[in-house]
Image (tube, rainbow, N blue to C red):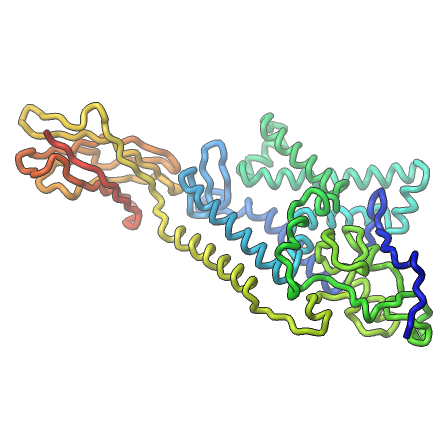
Length: 460
């Protein structure tokens, strides 16, 4: 069968020109998954700062005191190596997901997408459907238009302020932050950050929207490097859908020389990025699946088979099988698992105490009036637990030596203490001028909290 296609029809015209994208609200299988996942992630984001643990906020990143509490663990700047492992594990997990399922992070879990669709949902409830919003924006500014615009932007601002305030509860205790908010006692620095984050949320989700995904986000630019012929992406079945064209429901498309695509344009109208998936894979596509839900609704109305648009790999489109265990997927997955395993092992082996031995460089040793050799040391001890602890110090490696140190030293949660100690030994009993020794610092309350630090004892 030959199709009579004019030359001008072969030119692909972009759907979105200048101006805003009016996203049509869509229901369906993939929209339900994303909406439920979005609600779960938002509620998790809101509720985590309110989880109590031993009378304190379970998760708190206290920048002022340089303490980062995560349930029972306190992380100090010395523990920031964990951030490198987290970022590396997150990056490879993202690579794994992209090589397997394309930009599912963007379509289902990215905060920009979640908040953008939430703002769109508010817009739909206040200003009406897509066509109503277009008509409203083209109309003159009367009282009705002013009322709807003010209501929409007021709702956006309230969501933005609540989002920014919730974000700040990760850095300032939640109860303190909200109490000071209601009593108008916020400090200048808190007010500045809340205002800044609220402004960013309002601007990104309300105005920039898809431009953050298509212009500002670097992920959309390098994602194609991780794609291969087996990557599952949202794709249009060109062979089945073309020639596209409008028709009545009871008409036979084959008799009209048409494919299954009825050219309803709903796949374009529901797209948050404003693209036409029928033009092929585009970097703006965030793999959200909204066009799949819209197309399946249309296919059901016309009695056609579903999934004219679906998650499909390039090999599947060509009638080949997709290899789920290809080297790229296995490699990304193995590295991700290995990095998370390293983090877990590091966390289990991490002791909630930090210590170092400081020597007096001006006087490595001295001889007292009894003829014994004395070496002074200063032990720097940091309590990385969330309660006040009492620590004792013992010495090993030097027989018949005497350790002069406090019997117990109390250190508050997250604080550091400098503990002066002195080691006294008979120099005639030592064969070398420097003898390796070890200081053991242990908690009086928790037997598992113990750390050993090495040093040297010097004589003349």
